[in-house]
Image 1 (cartoon, one colour):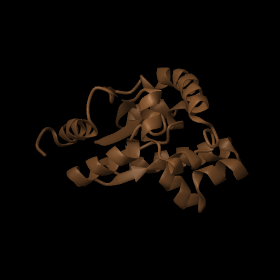
Image 2: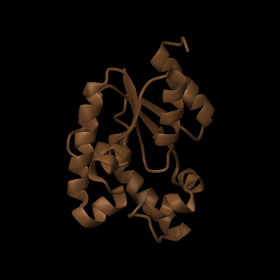
Image 3: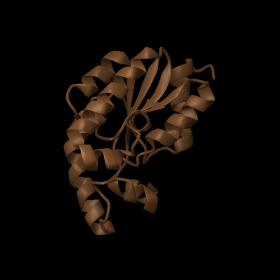
Length: 174
């Protein structure tokens, strides 16, 4: 089974994905890292110098590469499900999980480095960041909610989320 972790930036897709992959001994893919390796540049630089459309096309190529592996844990970029038919593609090729977090919770999780490396939020103060996230998340949530599984992360710990998803991948036999 391919498990696709979706959700807004800073929700823990990559962190949880690595933990789940390690515990289940499955390969882990992070579409942002795949794009960076293929392009030889960081996501922020790709978007700045080549444009968002170019980045989204590279991101789609990375997504399609994940279908080459039968069983894996895949962390997607926050905007990946929004572009083209990516959400439908994910639904066809695996099980999707939306890691749902409130903007306030996301902000508390973002390190200063995490804020700097994301072009859309770089330079925003806390108040501006909160307003941006609320608006942006409201636009994206209808797509995120198309996931097979929605986990409200404000109600459970990362450890509990990892347990639940490991059980899903192993059929409860971890």
